[in-house]
Amino acid sequence: MSAICLVDTSVLCEILAVPNMSAEHDAFLATLTAKLASRETLILPMTTILETGNHIGQQGDGNARRKTATAFVRLVKQAIAGDAPFTPTPLFNDEGLLELLGEFPEWAKLGSGFGDLTIKKEWERLCEVHPARRVYIWSKDGDLGSYDYEP
Image (cartoon, rainbow, N blue to C red; front, side, top):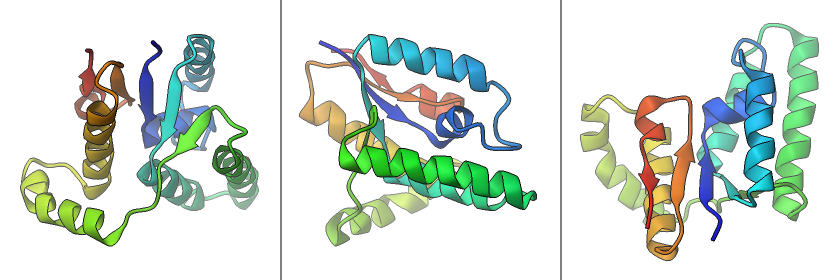
């Protein structure tokens, strides 16, 4: 059975070649191609969508921002429509957000941000829902990249 891969912001920035946030675009595209060939399920967490959009909007060159933003919007719209290799996670509900907020002070004490906590919690949820499948986070960040459940 194929793996479930949560795509982190650092990876989506590489895939989209976000200016000043991407140094290994071709290598990440090659890895993405391999994951697709392996029929992995690629999950696009809402945090990844939000953070990537922020990184795109913070770039200095307006033409580069617009070009990258257009590619970003196309990719996310395709994911929502089920036409892309990515599946977006749903928006937070009140109960889920309150749970995250309750855990955040301890998480922040460890030196990690709220976005990373939301991705970790989605990883935990997917591990619980799919106990017979590998579930991991694809990230350039060593802490997030260490989340890898093998049944």
